[in-house]
Length: 454
Image (cartoon, rainbow, N blue to C red; front, side, top):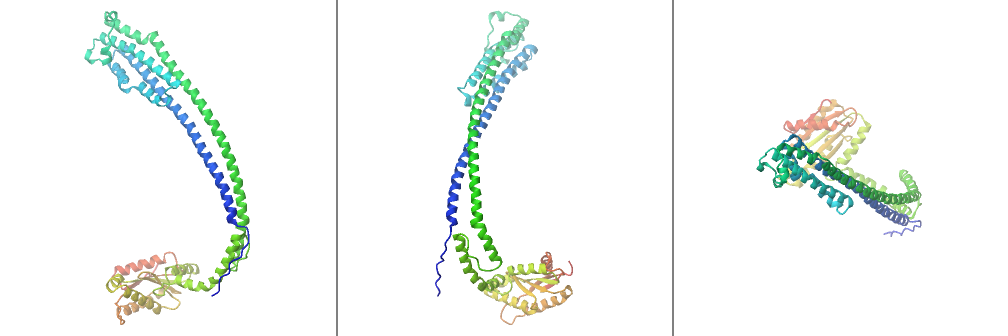
């Protein structure tokens, strides 16, 4: 036995250069990822500041709308004397509570902030104003002589002064209107509005300062990210140049050798020189093994017929070559019963017998194929469609032979569907033959049907 000599190779190792470039890339990518994460956080901070400002605006508007709604309803009650407006007033004050709800929402974010203090002050002023509003409602309710039980609890709890109690109904209504339309009431509403505007100015200033700081930090981080990208780009260019010099160029030489089916030149880096030496060893064995491997790849080990892979290659050749040909699909009828009743060993003997029958009854130029299992095929080269009757007769002779065995094997029969083509193995030839086979099976099996036309 000849011992293999160790390969003596000298050259620059791509693996070493690759490790250096990967290390540099990893460091750059780590810094780039960290910078990206920091940018994302800065962006989220800016976005969060904006969301907080929008939420503040919405809740500030809710507080203002709630206070304005109370004013509107008490004034409408004072003007129209319709109790529905009194009900609307206390629905807002006791159930909807937009002012209180808005302040509770803002408390989670802005408690302790000057802007929140202004809004709290606005709510307190609004609550103080409600005392006059409810007093006015009490005056009107008594002037209208409404039933005490129909009045809201807070109105029932309100007691008129002795002087106001002595007023007539018309005077009480006039006094109530003065309370909700007078200068003192309007001054109180102005105070509420001023507190709200002060809160808005405060939150605008705070948000603006925070967003400026976030934007400055974001800009610095993005500048660093640009530098990292530039360095990474330069490192990538260097990597590409090394790839071209150490990998692509040797590969082009080796590809040329492979195309010309000759031994590789010993050139390039250490890895490529080693590859060339190894390839040359394999190349020497390739030709010797090629015929044996091709036969194994294209033929069925049980029957010796062309297998499905070989059939696909044959089909491609016949598609390109063109010309007249016929194609038969052959099924062994009820083969499963033979396997189940006699065993797989007998089943294999039957398949071999079918294969020999197909080979021996057709021409040497024809190709018998085992597609898989109990399914066979026959490609009839240089065969015209007027030979369909001859083919049918051949199948009948094969069926007669198989159904009257003298070798101890169980009788079998074949169902065959066929079709002809004038233009090589067309795309629909298999489907037409399969359709013909289906008709044979539908009519009781053990027969042959050749499709007469496309």
